[in-house]
Length: 237
Image (cartoon, rainbow, N blue to C red; front, top):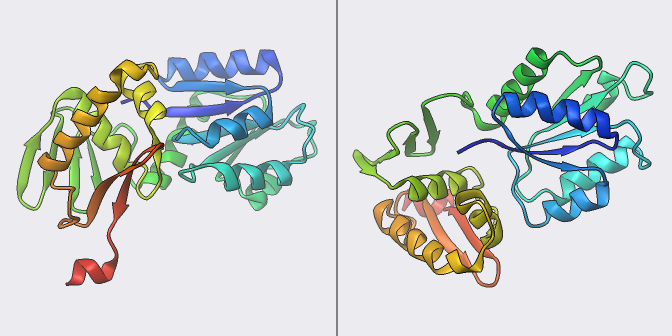
């Protein structure tokens, strides 16, 4: 499953340059030229990272960062891009809450490396790794297998991607529309029952019903699904 980035860029040419660099690096990107539209999207979508170009934005950087941090459902890492002529320095960006800050002119190789490093810090794993661990659950990407409690379970392509999406957004509600877009490519209501069927199979295959392995996959009525991490007290019982 590709990394999903939300990219804010007011300048059309800047957006085109970023789009080319990021698509060459095989990232899926949603571009925004309005901070209000981006903030609204963050209410329903879960992105792996945010990239913000300050140039041309009316709201001050501090205000925008605060609003992004408040609205983002899964608290994704944030990178800001600034220019030598812009009053926002790298130090300012980092102090305001950005996880990474880079300055124009942009080197494509350096930008991609910085995004990878930012995601690696956020996830605790290499974004190109063939394995991804979440608690007792280890995802083997190439084989579409999940290992936990001495068991190794094979999943279908869609089951695996749904499971990975939920584990990457632990304790955050992932909307039905977002899951459909990520897994089926469109938020078509016709796939809704199919999604429910896949989730039911995941609960059984990965034993996510009662939280016996530290996690429970629950339906959030009218919204979507959430993977809850059970409390330390419950796990110690």
